[in-house]
Length: 255
Image 1 (spheres, rainbow, N blue to C red):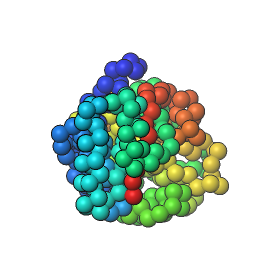
Image 2 (cartoon, rainbow, N blue to C red):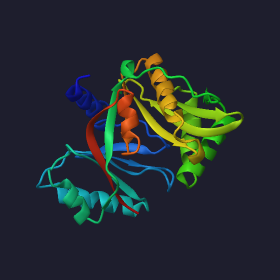
Image 3 (cartoon, helix red, strand yellow):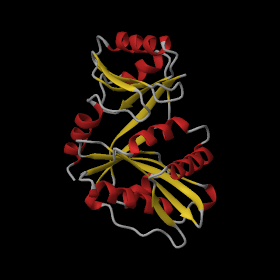
């Protein structure tokens, strides 16, 4: 895989473009940023892409903070290591945004991801109905905490379009892992999200099998690349499955 070409395609097709959101929000291009406002107070709102200079960065950051504050929305500024100006992280912190944990933008060519079977005693199910969505929600609520109703509402709306496929790993009748693949229409990319496994079921190869299943789904739908934002705990697993780190990303947030 050509790393530079893959990163350029990611920026052009997924970041520097106004596209559908995951929870019914609205993306819009305003000057030198692309931002999103969620319909749900707990949904994702923030800045997905920016093209700033040393002369306008502070003004644009302040303008976006005012915009989201007036709408009573938390803000996440999605910063990537190649974003400009070079001191953008310092400017974001100076404006009152707090950095989160650094993640790696990991990308694989779908043809490089091996087909792996599910571990013994585990079945992988592509979710297509309301019962399946509620089981996905139950796993995510248990693993990540909080209420994932907005995420489930969004998936419900997009199931019939084929833009998302939630996947469950089930032991007997018990869902033990849930994840999804977003199939970005008219792009080369599909995105992996979720991947939450109940603690007592970790370390058995379920996560690897879930990645493999979603890669196969993306390949069948004609996508070339599979991307995800990976924390240090999942990077070694993903690297063994053919993923490479293209850059890093840090969420800068304000409640």
